Image (tube, rainbow, N blue to C red; front, side):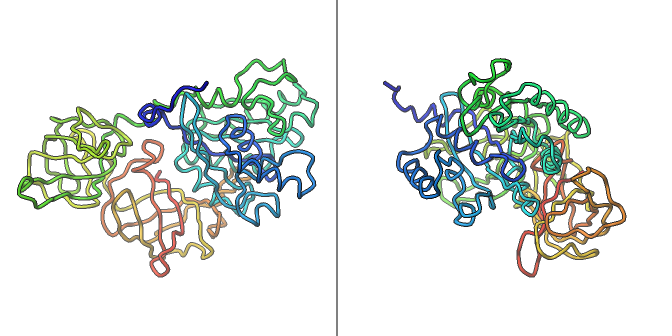
Length: 429
């Protein structure tokens, strides 16, 4: 008999966001389907629908990729086209999965799905080994600062569960990862179709003594991934109730980007530079306003100060002796997401934390050949799915950190002012 559901315990469980990546037909969607099935996270009617579709296709097995491939075109072609998000939980953790496409023309979709991930699962077909898409996805994972990578060598059943094949691919991938800024890498031999080493340990690979995929997902240490040193609080909204009991109340609401804030802390407000002291920090918990002794990323809170400082949306509250870079000339990597190519000296709208401004493209430094990981300084034409390094100048100063230091204050998006379409995601260098 299963224990009763405890809502408070569930809400307080640690959340792990992870993304999958790999070449076409490496089994990403099948792996997620297997993970959800073996964790009993698929409803009976969902499983029945997948079984019926598998029979109609003439398969002798249940096609678990159908669990995540929800678009009609995806099911017809047997590929992933858009990012599919799935949620599930075990007694140890809650999970959000982003199943991203493997095709080259959907690089932008992978960037979208991986931008908030704590961990990336990179699949490699045991028959093919490391291919160009492996380079591409590993580079993007490194560029996006994903702290943990699990390399799943899939389809081991098709190479007779060979330890030699597995070790060969491990050595090949280590050569690749040595060129990238990737620190925590794990390797697991699996068969997503049969479930080997996904949730249950494989009986076919007794030579592998490491953890299963689920065990690693449940136990990988992610608490230290948050930046609790550099205090950054982008103000999203100024709360003035204008009620008799809150006549003089002025609260600054937003989501903490990094660091730890406490009542009594001396802070500085950007861009004015005025100093103040935090009098209280509140958050809404179960519909009630609750005072906090401390607040940290990624909590959404309201901060009150001891001084009436002119603060509005887009301003930032930081520590007096720990401030971000304030500037208008910004050097960054971009992944281009639009059919219209980047226009040199073109003007775009820019969004950074809660601040909105305009900018001009001053220079294109180089384009990255992410198959060879080389910089191409001759070809500076950046179009759909290209990654390059550019220099922009903004109309007003931004308060930013490098993306490596802070994924929130180090990221921006560029917007076409004419169509209001997001054209690029940027990572500040």
